[in-house]
Figure 1 (cartoon, helix red, strand yellow):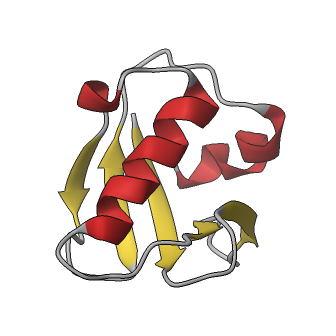
Figure 2 (spheres, one colour):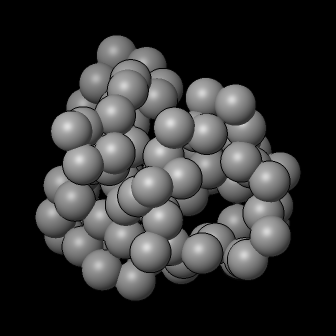
Length: 90
């Protein structure tokens, strides 16, 4: 399953902040976008949120972009705060 995410790095706290018009998930990350720190923090956050190992989350596209496509295992249960994003799954 693919999640489309817009990341805002260097935020005060890491959190899901909502959805864009195309149902892209908006997430603020407390880490800076230096040397992959924000990407690592995003994967750590999603791993905890989705209760899956970090090794099962892969950045498919957008490694250096604010818009990212992340691959997670098919059948992963999405928490209620991500249920609105089901249309953004490819």
